Image (cartoon, one colour):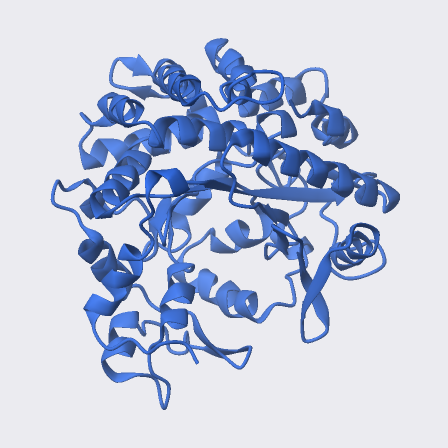
Length: 454
């Protein structure tokens, strides 16, 4: 039985216990990927001979993963130091180990990609380096047989117009970073929230959906603006000078709950909707009383661009082609693990007021690096942000066996941004040009290749 929670101070203490000395700081990366039928670019189903469950079964048999099931369905694979999980529409996610360097993450990711390509190619499927399913509409994508998702899916339809798209169609890459104390955690949270528009512009990679261009560079980013505003976006209180763990706790307390988990079964709390963790803490739910595990699970249902757990979780970036996947954790490590670089990143965005932050983010969703923040293009600000991060990685002097520091994982994307392009603008150009609006060419052009990782 998880430890009972009795008062708000117990919730605040949860975040305090996440603090680590700098020597113990690590970075964890989570890589979501869309998988499609090679023949027509449609999303592969979860069930059936060529489905995602069969892929997981094959990976377990071939590579020694331990299957984890729910009511007889394989929904995850447990490895020695990492885990493979599934998003609601069958997107395949590697939840990587806590690595001291990006070189470590690179080895893990490269192995995962090689294994995934081997398994999918035998099933007539292809992993795409896109942030969104390019062809299948949501009613054509099978919802995973996972109780959590079957609670969330109908709820999303009541809270916004795009939440079900988020669940079934989108894929992102996120990085998790440590903090030393409350002040450090809030500072990293604030800076990470502040650079959200730049991250969307740099990593924009979802311009195609439902079989054609959708009018956005990061449609995935736009989707989050109308998913569930009670738990999404960029909360304004983060930018207050006196923001604290208590403020984040107060925010999370008033987010409606989705469920409780007891004896591996989900208890639906969305009927009727609106039951908050604050109410649960004060009076319980039937015979159930709030526990640390309940709080931990509740925090996973907060979908802000950056969220606080026992680490800072940056969730903004679209999923990338494999050659750019490691740029996201590299960028954030370079910025957030060097005090001067952290200050430099904040200097780029600290002058925006809250309304401007939202407007610039919306413009980044629509126009990517061409969006503007006052007299500056986001291309200029984004490239400067990447230069700051590269300097932080150079100073860290974490070298691979060739004597290279971690800034090598930024260089390809930096070159792209310097040229005025994001992954999305390249996709748009190729879709209209060399691919001639043909899905077969899109699939071939966006397919994961093992040797494309640095």
